[in-house]
Length: 417
Ligand code: EPU
Image (cartoon, rainbow, N blue to C red):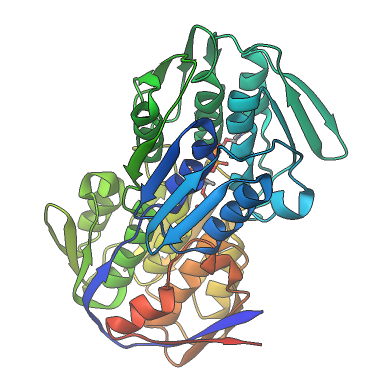
C-alpha cells in the first residue's frame, strides 16, 4: 500500500495544469466499443481508473495504444465475453460496458461494479433504462446478463438525474431502432463531452447538457476523435488548495464556467481570485468568511467537491454547514479532520463546522477518493506532518498529485508501507 506524507504550511505559488476529466474519460473509453472504426481520445488523464478500463478493453480483445495523453482504440477485434468480477470491481465505471456492449452486440455480461465506498450506489436506473430499450436482464450472484433481440427507441424518465444511467442509456440508444428520449437526464459537462464523441462517430444525439436528451438510433458508428474536457473536480481541488494556502496560485487549462458553483461560493467567503478565459489565479485570505453548501447535480455544487471544501470551512471564521444530498455516506473524512483539530459535528446528512481551528498533522486514512483529497488539503495547512494512508484511492482520480503540488512549493512524498 502507499502513503503520502504532507509537510504542512508551505505556500503554494506557480501554475498547476489541469488534466482531462476522469469522469468523462472513464465513459469515453468504453464508448469506443460502439465504433466500427478506430477512435482517438486525447487529453486522457494518467490515473489508475483509466489503466483498469484499458485492461478490460484489452481483455475483451480491443487494441489499445497509449502515447502520453492520447489513446487510440481499435475495437474491431473484440470478442464479446463475460467481464469477470476481479476486473469489474476495480472501478465504478465498469458499468459503462453494459450499455456499450449491449449497443454493439445486443449482449453484455458483467459483474456489479466497484468504486468508492460512499454509501449505497444502486444501478437500478441504468437497468430500468436498458430494459425499456428492449434488454432482458438476469441478475444472479452479483452478475448481470443483458440481452436484446432488438433495441427499440423509447421514452425514458429517470427518477434521479443519474450521470451513469444517462450515459449508459445513450450508449445503447445510439444503436437502437428509432428515437429515444431521456427525460430528467443528468446535465453534467461530462455528458456533453460523451454525446459529442458519439456524434463525431455518426450518432444523432441532441439536447445533451439539458434535462431532455433525444437520440435517433443509427446502424453504424465509425472512426472519430475527441478530447477529454478539463477535470472540473481536479481543478476545484487545487483552487481550494490555493484558497487555503496559495499565493497567486494559477490553476490552468480549465473551463471556468464549469466551476461557477465553487467560485461563487469562494467569492462569498472572501477568497481572492482572478478568473481568466481558461485559468483562475487564487490566493488565500486571512479573513475567510464561513459559508454553507448543499450538493446537487450540475450546475449545483458537486458532491465530488463536498469533502475538499470541508477542509476550507475548518479555516473560515464562524459556522459553516455542509449538506450532502447525493450520497449517504460521504463523510468518512470528518473523523480524520477532527483528529487533526477540526471541530465538525455530523447530524444525518449535514455537517456543522466551527472555524477557524488550527490543524495539526496526524496519521489519517484516505477512505475514498475525495476524502483523500480533503485530507491532503488539510495537510497542506496543518502544522507538522500529515501521513495519509491508503492513497491508492487518491491515485485512481488525481494524476500525479504529489508532483503537481510539489511543483508549486508544497512538500509531499509518496512511499510504500
Ligand atoms: N442512483 C440510483 N440508481 C441508479 C443510479 C444512481 O439510485 O441507478 C443514485 C445514486 O445512488 C446517487 C445518485 O443517484 O445517490 C447520483 O448518482 P449518479 O448515478 O449520478 O452517480 P454515478 O454516475 O454513479 C458519477 C461519478 C461520481 C460522481 C457522480 C455525481 C463516475 C464514474 N462517477 O457517479 O464520481 O460523484 O457521478 O456527479 O463518473 C468521484 O469522482 O469521486 C465520484 C464518486
